[in-house]
Amino acid sequence: MSEAPIIFEDDRIVAVCKPAGRVTIPGRGEIGESVNYEIERRLRRKIFVVHRLDREASGLLVFAKDAETHRLLCAEFESRVAKKEYLAVVAGALSGTGEIDKPLREFSSGRVAPAADGKPALTRWHAERTLRGATLLRVEPLSGRKHQIRAHLSSLGHPILGDPQYGPPPRPIGRVKRLMLHALALHLELGYDLRAEPTEDFSAVLAAL
Image 1 (tube, helix red, strand yellow):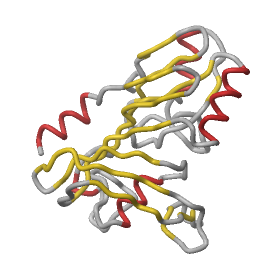
Image 2 (cartoon, one colour; image 1 turned 45 degrees about the vertical axis):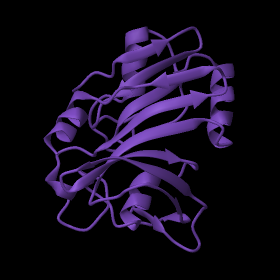
Image 3 (cartoon, rainbow, N blue to C red; image 1 turned 60 degrees about the vertical axis):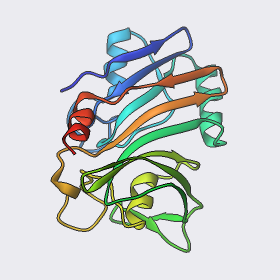
């Protein structure tokens, strides 16, 4: 099990880089220690979960150290004041910039897809680099729906490499061993600009394309 390195800590928050394959918090039937329990064990204190990342994704996760900071940060995420930035490597060629404005709905299977009766969801993307059969994108989700980036990019016809759930079979997309989605940066009105550089496994796949 890969450890989640601490990349920033003060008296109010602790920020870590979650490895791909680790869960933020324990869920039903999940195997392996969750990241929040790992950090509590290492710091020997309680921490408060502010937001989550998909198990398959890697990148920046922030926890609060006290109830008041937790309340303030949760309010930022709920009101979409917190600015999130991701890196995603998608199948196929994309150029320029774009927006995906499609409401999303979660179905009984647990998958999320655009639907007329879904909740509003908006994702902005910018093509950073063309790769061999793929494109590196910088992505900004302007809403916080479950699997939003994965479902939106799949609906555009450019699923994320390594995705085991979204995009046409065979999956994982591109036969890549990990989901090529990384939470890169986070701006918080509470006074933090945080960044988690891509993990070694993300960079290794990127370098091979």
